[in-house]
Image 1 (cartoon, rainbow, N blue to C red):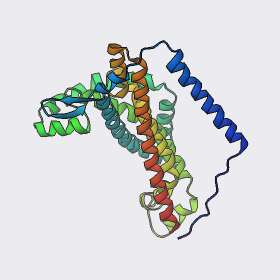
Image 2: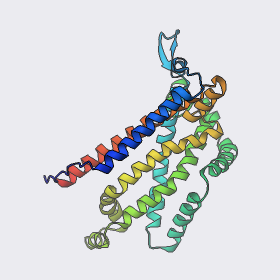
Image 3: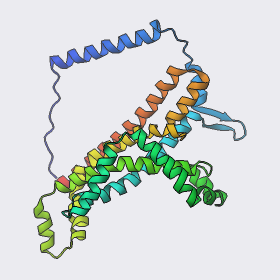
Image 4: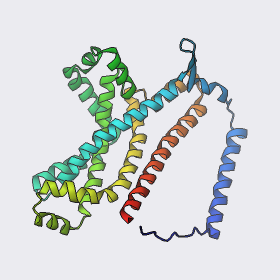
Length: 298
């Protein structure tokens, strides 16, 4: 195993100046918020919207904000899985030498990347949610499932009454994020030297075998960091679907703010929740990258 030398962290005078400036700005912001701002803080009332005690079950259960956070997690996971599949297909098409395949990939990427996400949410929601999904009768099919299956679907996705809206939101986010993932995968494939293709062909591999067994495994190292960043972006972008009444974290925050007028407490808490989600993803990906690097150095 080859160990790379670790570089020592050096702190310069400019670093100290910047740190002191940031600390002064933070202190000034806290002073304005707590002293100068004419606002009645009610942090003690906020916790009941995160957790509530259920007397029937005799235990604490998630309330609106925590339920919204769980919905955001489910929405982001399913959207990222579907977006990765779409991006993988479009990325492979984009790296092809055939003009027709490149046109399909380029058209998809350029349309999705050059339209405002909010506009795409409305377009896909009113088309998929109001036109396609009713024809498939998804809500009816889900409502006819056994109670145990409905409970499972509620845990991993959404309940029968909101399953169609949740599905359309997942598809919409996946289409938006898939365009960026397609470019990530295309650039990862393009980064592999052409000699790898030639070497694989010389031992009798066809194009699909070469891509699956030789090119993609090598491209993972280049793809993983930006792909992790895209997953974090998906978590943040999931807030867009609040406009179509998906009960994720941002939607729950807007509903609570309208009914309680606890503007600052609610949005500071929601900010902290999003930060916890994104930092947890960043830490997990950093550990995965470290393990991959150790594996490749052996």
